[in-house]
Length: 269
Image (cartoon, rainbow, N blue to C red; front, side):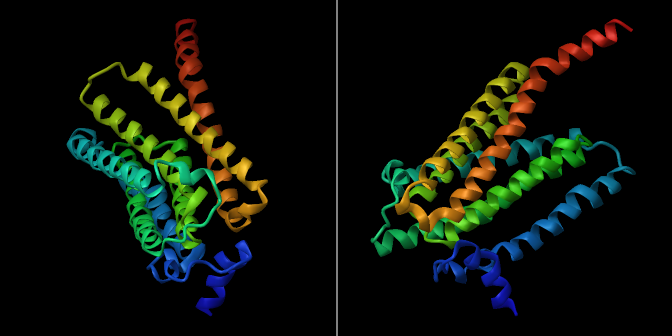
C-alpha cells in the first residue's frame, strides 16, 4: 500500500521514477504525501492549537526576543553556508543554466546529500511563525507564510527526489540569497541599527525580484525539449515563485499606501 501511494505522489506525476538513492532518505523519500502529512500536523499546531492556548497567556515578546535574535543568526549562517556550497557544486551557478546531466557520480552524491540536509533545515523556517504566535502577532499573512514555507520544502523535496543537478539547483541559489538578506534584516532591526520601515520596503523589493527570476527561469526551461526530465520541478518552482511574487507585491503596496491612508482617516474623524 505504501509503495502505491508513494508512486502516485511523485513518480507518476513526473512520468518517470525518481532517483533511487534519494528515495532512501527518510521523510523526503516518502513523497509529497508523507511531507504533506507532516505539514498538516505542524499547521494544526501553529495555526490552531497554539493561538488558542495563547489566548490565556500574556504576550511573550520581551522574553523571546533574545531567542529570536539567536534564531535569525542561525538561519543567516545556514543560508550563507548553503549559498557558498551551492556555488561550489554548480560551477559558480553556470550549471543552473543548462539541462545537461551531471555524469560525475561522486559530485552527484555530494549534491544529493547536501540537498537532503538543506531540505531538513528548511523546516526551521516554521520557527518564524511560532515566534509570531508567541508574541501574539500572528495574523492573516501568517497562513500564507506557512503555505509558502511548505511549498518551498516541497520544491526542494522534488529537486532532490528527481536527479538533483543542472537547472533545478537554481532555486537553492535564489532561496539562500533571500534567506541571508531576510535574516540579516531581522538581526539589524532587532538591534535597532536602522530605520525599519524604509529598509523593509527595500527587502520586499529584493524578494519580489528573486521570485520573478524563479518564474522566468521556469518559463524558459519549460519550453526547452531537452529539459523534459525536470518538468515537474519547474512547474512547482513556477507556482512557488508566482504565488510569492503576488504576496510580496501586495505587501509592498500595503507598506506604501496603508499606513498613510489609515493615519489620514483617523485624523479626519
